[in-house]
Length: 321
Image (tube, rainbow, N blue to C red; front, side, top):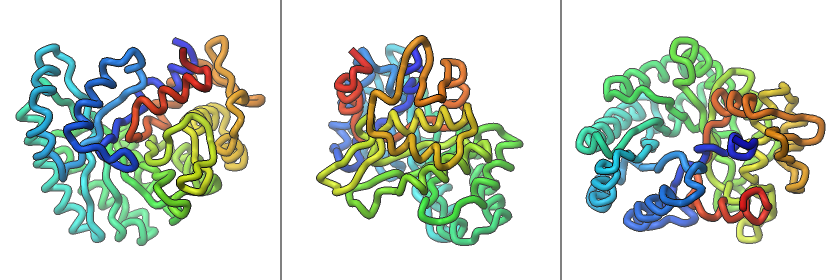
């Protein structure tokens, strides 16, 4: 396997029902089928399914799920749960959404596999800046996931404009009991310039997650491979090659926040070299084994409302044929 495929293997969580694509559920289902049939399907990880739209999904995806079961190729899902402002409200919503998703999978056991879940942290936990409060909440939430027989990683979204070190420490302690169970989710962009996370904040988040041995995923604004200016947003957006390379090389070489930030801001695609089974940027490199290890312990995936746009961009960058 070459370094590029090791870097991006099963990295894209298809979120077609979300902006900016915001496809109707029926179209997103059909698009996901096309993604699974594409020659570059190695890039695809899972379908992002909001718990609030499970009923709609069941109505519209029946034929596709029957086909998946018939050919023994179940869909991998990440269940997107809702949350609440307070801890009590968040746990109540989690119980409700957990039952919805469990019911869906039990109804289609040969067609669907939930291999991860994700949801926002309640504001009460984020604003507490208290590790013990965070640890207590995560323990209670994981118990609900276990009761619904969801034992995979759970990605908790934090606000990068606020301090979240107490959450990372709580996640680290939880993972001492169940390795890789509690993960973080970072939102890198949006539809307005104000929603774009600064490179400084994202670099800090990468380092906090790395030092705490907490896996993470990214979402929003990662449609193209390299960092670039988007006129519709009015700001520079991050590239998925930048963020994955930065995560891997940061983990491999224990890079500083400044070095991580420089990689996140890199706009020259030629600066990232994929050759001889290695990824390199400036004087730093990682082989396939190191890339795989960093993907497992660090950046797992990114959410995108398009599969084909990132693929086409990698072809423009001459990374794919």
